[in-house]
Image (tube, rainbow, N blue to C red; front, side, top):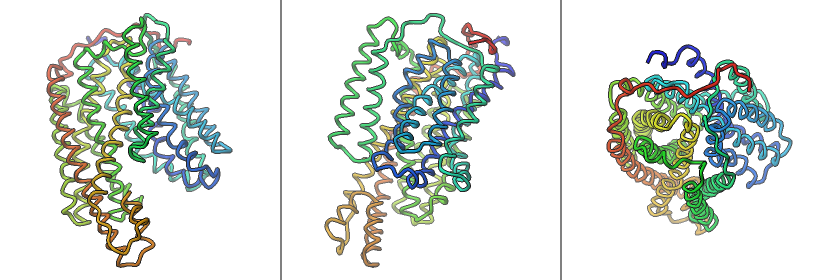
Length: 521
């Protein structure tokens, strides 16, 4: 068994694998900081600016399943290095984009390249760390790296934008990927499935178009409500997804191996992860608006107050492997999710709290929420990857990432709609606001703030007070629904994962036949 434990080379290789995940999380955060400067320089239209922001995430979600399967076929390290090279080129192209059209194309290429990185790094971890306890720790470190990128991204991005042009934030990707391209062949062994099936191009097309349509529909639902375009995109995406699943049952070399779902540890972990991810983005978005539009904090102040919950996530990631060595992971995850639900329930008291108490209540609730949810993110990802055969680890990793992408999009659409519905039903616009302005104020809290800016002081104060109270009520109701979802996730974890033993009692697995780290491609 000792021969199967990871040694120094694998742990150094893990540090290399953290680089692309760190960069991906930084890349998500720095664009928002650069938008004002690039808008002044490139002058994109409103539609172009939306595509600059959204196309990256759309294409990552659309290509994840395909890239995970490609990695299983051609080799996980090879795909990682190809993606790293493409990401570096696209980063340089984005940095020096002369027009909005070129920047959109560069962001699209970054999305496709980004889809190769996450499943490749996770599947390499699966094949490098065969001891279950070591693998859980490795995934924990990997996730800490991703979260760390979200923390340092705004700091590094703000520093660059203070001294350089907007494209400098994209150039961060070039040196990081150069290091990966140099160190990867030296430190990362190659793994590929022993038997290679022909890649079914029809399945590739179906998976990409279905994912893009569903994600687009969900984002439009969250932003604009149930419009014709959003519902049509969502419905067509779901139909194509059904066709895709049916095709996987009939072809000899499926893009997605549906047999994986027969393993309770795999399907139970995926389902629980989906429920947990549903709650995070929606609550995070509402909390950010609460701090800035209700409490009146500046973006910098709101960002600083978001650090304690981020530290709670990191703490949960660190302690999860320690607990899972001695306790059943299903029990650890379920207990954490009950704690998480208790934390989110604190937000239901915001309506009765004043501004100062509300801030502390919000931060405390988010801290407990993220601390409790973090173990499931680590252990669930570990169980998804660990329950799949080594030759399908790329597909399993891609499916885990896809579920989380869809979970976030669904959560934003559902919980955003709940909060908006409560806001509109509760808000009582005071007299003195014209009908057209009242309609704008009733739409969103941001609209109410804008309308109040052009009204007399007495009317403006009354409108802001009513709008802030209505928004807080919407946040409280959303928090209550989120707590119910988290309790359902805890119940699912207990029922489907109770048979999984602590990682210290799980046998080490036979490693997949591999090529050495220095093999030529």
